[in-house]
Amino acid sequence: MPRNNYSFGFDCYGNTSQLMVVGRGIEVYDNSFTNKGTSFTDQERQELELEGALPPAIRSLASQVENCRRLVAEKESDTEKFIYIRELFDRNVTLAHALIASDISSYLPIIYTPTVGLACRYYSSMFRKANGLHFYPGNIDQAEDILSRFRNRQIRVAVVTDNQGILGIGDQGAGGIAICLGKLMLYTLGAGIAPWHCLPVSLDVGTDNPELLADPDYLGWRQQRLRGQDYLDFVQRFARAFKTVFPQALCQWEDFSKQNAFATRDAYLHDLISFNDDIQGTGAVALAAILAAMRCKGESLSEQVFLVHGAGAGGVGIGEQLAAALVEDGLTVSAARARIYTVDSQGLVSNERPLEPYKKTFAKDSSSLPWCKGGVEMGLLEVIQNGKVTVLIGTSGQGGCFTREIVAAMQKNSARPVILPLSNPTDKAEALPADILAWTSGRALVATGSPFAPVNRDGQEVRIGQCNNVFIFPGVGLGVLASGAREVLPEFFTAAAKAVAVQMSPAELRQGVLLPEVGRLQEICLQVALAVGKAAIAAGVSAPCAFSEFQHDNDPERLAELIAKMRWRPDYLPMVAR
Image (cartoon, rainbow, N blue to C red; front, side):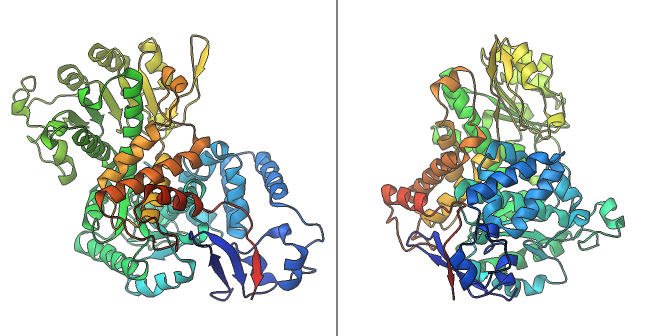
């Protein structure tokens, strides 16, 4: 299809109000943004030269959705369902999103975790249609020209990965772009950022995955990964081009290795409107669960002692977010960090051993701990017992490491310990929620990283809240865009966490449920966006929204109106033949 065969009309809020179509006939039908399938009206069929190309009956969007639901239900596996929905997205993005929105809770595990992991692993063999952009050493010098081809779509959010730290399954080479596609679908479903404003990007710097390098059908750049200055130069060339072409757009860094995740995020904190979801989104959703637990317990955050088991990007990100929230509660930075322990595969993270830079923030000086003498390695149990830990968070990927002994030690420190086994997938969860509740006679407050079935306690089904980043990043993105924030601040994630935590009803809190149901995603994202927008105003980093004529003027009520009305919903737009 020729470039710019369509354009968008926007209302004063920046929401798409109509599609203006230059193309005719099959060009219209073959473009996923302009295609309505059997829903083209009689007038549209005449004006767009589709008469005779479609059967005469006209289906409503609701009827199309119901038909798609039946077809998905007939698929035997989640992989087949994933392929069907992705193919639907490739030919009709509005219908695909309307389908998912009809039952977000059921379709989320199909379009994202855990099923999307298979799409990453088998990307080359499953490849059907190109989506997004693939930069590699052979074209990175053309990055500005390549990005410029997407100017007509008014890109507002890009999700960018270097494909190295994919969903706990590691280096997936070019296949990592499937993660970006999935995340952006959630931006659309949760925050209402229209799919044409979203851009998935793979920074293909090679792969160290021997299976991919040996696969004759592998579609990525078949070289060992760039490292050192070559890697930094590559990312910098992309970042410079992105800022030039889309200076007001949000860049979400996704699934970088733990070594590069912090370095990339910190390098572009002030150069791009950007954040890293694995670090900051994970930190915020864990904080949301903990804040809800404080409401259950009737205690304050500053009374707790925290242990993060697993000191990778997610674990350290949780530590950072906890420290920021504790400082907001009135503690000094040093006092906040003193209440947070991190434990990795070698035990307590301390300054007595060589450490990667990102681990040093929460490293302890063993000589200042009377129970940690002589640099002796202190494991998980010893730190819980001696540190009097009341909140235990698992990001280690070590399935079953929160044993009955560990949980019992936690209960000695708190009548209602907070225990969050967050590692994905299910078989890597540090403990099963049913076991934790059984071992504590239902007293523990539990949320998990993977979805778990409800647990029966005293004849009552208790839902297990899931620490899913989807409660955070879409709303953060919408709040940043609407407020015109010039950078993404740590305070935004504290505000997001608080906005999620207060969504829990008294009845849910009485049951110990710490996080909302995914089916409430759109409602939650709206509240997160408003909280983030207000935080941007309070921090003095807001500006006129670049995508809207209607301006909030730093007025929270006008900001709320803008956020609500700039959100796209999956309905067919009026089409104007040009």
